[in-house]
Length: 406
Image 1 (cartoon, rainbow, N blue to C red):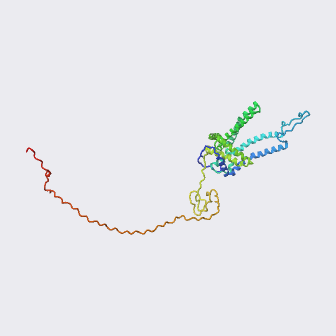
Image 2 (cartoon, rainbow, N blue to C red; image 1 turned 120 degrees about the vertical axis):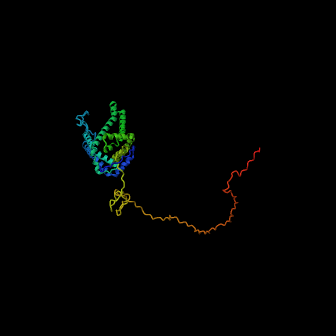
Image 3 (cartoon, helix red, strand yellow; image 1 turned 90 degrees about the horizontal axis):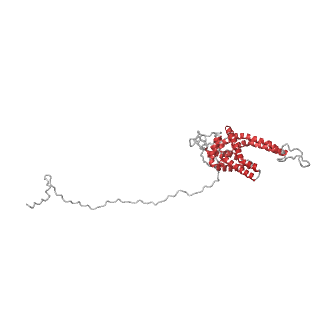
């Protein structure tokens, strides 16, 4: 690819069928519209050339040999019966005979176009996966599907055989009823039921295999990709079938506008498959979102190299408004008519004026005069015994009375 995706985290699996894929695929297409339009035109160029050639042959045959069903009548006799041989082509017009000869050419072209589609699918689905992953795509990526040619061709033939088998399964009862009862109400109802069943099963199959081609473009084998896609979509297969139906209506509406809308809706098919791969299966190696970087690469150089801020002096003008330095050009800020500046009152509150309080005069406090306190007169203490006189402990006690018998 143009740039290899660095190893990164795996996308978060939401497990939900989102109609937001339509808007996101449109935004991705509009960001890098050039490679996608060239890729779609390259894919459709062989079919366009063959269709123009086939249409020219049909017009030439109609104007030279008659319109479809315009069979020349054989000569008729008097009795009303043909007397000459029928048309050598079996009583068919030259137009019908020539169209039967062109039919093998159509099948041959479809067979060869499958090889061209396999080569282009490899490049276009790989572009879608890389862009959803966050890696820019380039014009030369359109023709880098050679490594995936074998896998894409195998899955195209495998799904083609599966589609023919599904068609035969749904319409076989109509043939059986027509063989036994002929054309009638029963045959018509059986055919209508078979067609409805074929359409419903077809939408379910498309929904189940929505991320399969994106998985193959990312290097997964055919059978693991088909199994992984069906396993991831199966819990939401009816929602996936509804999404395919709505997107099919959008695709058909774009075809009605002279086919010009197909230049946008065809790339959206590849991108929707890649978005389903991201949200339903999980896309590895998602590129991190770009981060703005600032740093000087040297004196006088702008933009600065990563790692340092602010830039050095004399480093040149800053980036334009809204731009990331060194990456994208910025937007010019919108110029609005000038308005005269309005005069607003000053926001500073006025200083509150307080009255000046004269200082108070305090006189020193004179000491308080108390009356004199007379001294306390205590009585004189009696002198105690001296140390030389021994103290009789019984001296202070009274003598006991004498006994009465004495």
